[in-house]
Length: 146
Image (cartoon, rainbow, N blue to C red):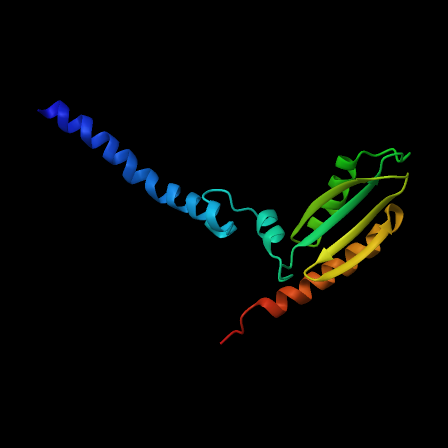
């Protein structure tokens, strides 16, 4: 009799533990609401799904010419830009696109604002503008202090 109780209580315990995550995952699959994605919410996912342009994350768009003669790889350029943006405590994510030609250009999208494209040599000008825009958006999103 005791083994039957153990055999029945183990599946019930497993079901009780997994039900909240399974329900959240099914809701996410039905609605594509990223806030209900169990253990998978990332800043990038939230920024991508914010179609209203309310996100203050900086989307750094790297357009990489397929015939470029630049000595750096896209990954190395991303690391350089990441270090620079991190120095400003900026919230950012990357989109890398392979484009025809030999030019490498960087654009910045912050909310509904789009800056660029900047040639790779002038990308610091775009960083300054994007970071300042992000600060303005973040200050306007915060609730008033009482």
